[in-house]
Length: 122
Image (cartoon, rainbow, N blue to C red):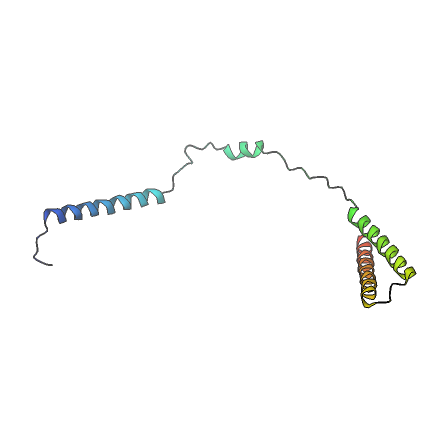
């Protein structure tokens, strides 16, 4: 309050707080200051570093047909299994008919996929 005297302890605490605020302000100013490195960095530094970087090599990627061959094997296995199922006449129950139709659907999906891939590659 106005007119009140500060005790020596309060005065010391106020002085310490003021010093801390001043120290904080100096630290913030020092951290925000951008150093000028142009005087110590050689002019051709970037060119020398760029010269030491090896040039990019384009990796040679050889096109393989493992996936397409696996699809052809799958088509063959499906055709063989459908032929065996049709020869044995397993369509007597609902489960057997469902298995046969599932194999037919898989065969159709693979045939459509192969047709699309072969047309897009040529």
